[in-house]
Amino acid sequence: MPDKPKVVIISGPSGVGKSTICTELVRKLEGLYRSVSVTTRQKSDTEEDGKDYWFVSKQQFRNMIDKAELLEYAEVFGNLYGTPKTAVDEALQDDKTVILEIDVQGAKQAKTIYPDAVMIFILPPTKKELAERMNLRGREENTVAEKRLSQADREIAAAWQYYEHMVINEDVDRAVSEVIRIIEQS
Image 1: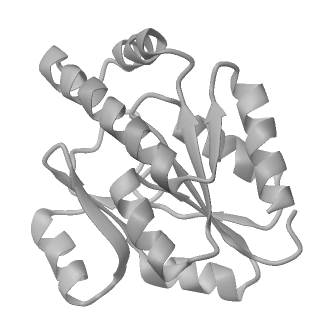
Image 2: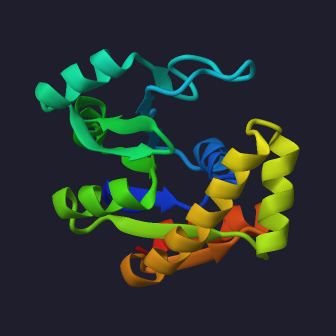
């Protein structure tokens, strides 16, 4: 583990494997805190409130914005996503390295608050592979999946401007090892 706590931002297009990588990081490294985002989207059958996301209404989310309780927030495909600020600050005070699994919009906001944050963007091996992964998840209708693929192109283009590290997730074990190396050397 790094010698001092830090903020690590992990982003990438939908379906690229960010959640899997973050889960493995927490499993393999001591002293990590994985921030749980707040969202207004509907919970899927496989998700657990408080573990995968905090699922809230749009009004609850707006109240959090009004009370400045979010470190960052963004609208993605008609749903709001944000990072609760208090939990991140408490983890850093407890000498834990914080993992933020957030999109590019939120990452830019978080980087202004934590300028030393380590920014890692997860890339798919190919666009075709990303489309297949999205399809296997079975979460979206075709039109939503097409929008997500189109958004992936924009996110990848933006990533080259804002992220210090790019990791291709062709093999999840190799990708996790690469992210661990980046965290330890930063």
